[in-house]
Length: 496
Image 1 (cartoon, helix red, strand yellow):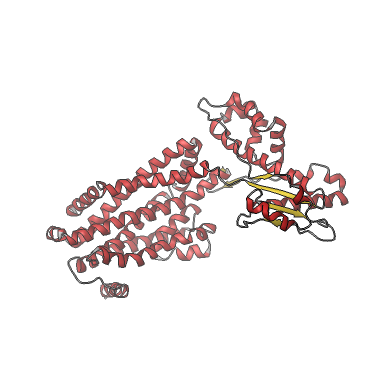
Image 2 (cartoon, helix red, strand yellow):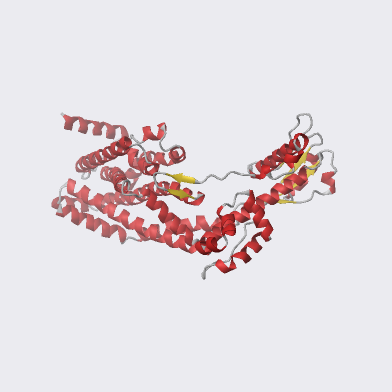
């Protein structure tokens, strides 16, 4: 035990004092900062300039009304996020409850109408001046996604709108041209024509289709129930507030998003930390074999003590890595938006409860040990870095497979696919970290925890046997088929 501790201490010091360790530690927060800041610098989604050739009449005005409403809704949503971070919410609710209600329900028609009555976001900011915090930041309104431009006469009067629109689309003056034909809405003809040289962005087309559909519905109501069409009854919208009885609280859309992202982040961090640190472990074993330092270690400790010490060293390095990354990320979030930090902490508290935190840590450490054991076994069998690369390729393909299934698993974390794949021993820690926030059945939770522990114990034992057999050999590493066959033989002999 003492020798394993000394080896773990040596491995830890050796890894954290390397320049590559500091570079990798710094690159991850920088990468996250770039991912966050670049969309802000570029203004997010690009503006789409479009025009409408309305041959039927009346539909252009309906689309422009929908565009005005969309811009107001986006302004109010952005303003609501600004209020949460920069305004004293308690004082606002006590003094101006109607104003606070407008920001609490930014998607409702009543809130958008109230914002328009205040004179837009500028008028709302004027009302909020008395409630702003001392360190409140400036408000930056969102850039409109779509901008309408009046069609040129040559385009509006053209008999073939598609041919006439081509030079405007190729020059970039318009992103798209919408043609509403003369018979649109009559005799069951409900198809408009959308001309665009780039069909990859479907947001504008979807917006125009929704606006035209709403206009058609309004015209039908004008014919069958004109009194209803002129009223505000159709502007009523339902508001659904999310509540989780397991967590005992209500969640805003933003908070709920963070609750779903935290498990994904933990699982991805497990993968990144495991691969990054375990690959350094592999390289270290190959270097020790090349310099014959491994012979010195074997003269002082058993193969089992060496492997356990190296794996413990990997865990210590991983903990330091995660701590530094978490501190850097929280610092970046605090600089970008102070309210984000509290939301992330709240999401972490909801995920890491007393019921789930022990299991969360168990799956994390089991994953580290399983993946570390794989890389340690590869390093012990390789005689050079080239040999290690030949075995590392298939291993990386196997390790990366769960990342390709994150979307499907998170879509239904307690579904049949997620339940089945969680029992695959090699992937159990990764997938259970994804699912743990969704509260899977107790049988699956404790059953997979037992499976993870058993798999970890087997991998450490198997790695010790591989290490003892191959670490001093200079022969070529075994093939993948031979490696699997050898593992089956070891298990069979132990059972006998």
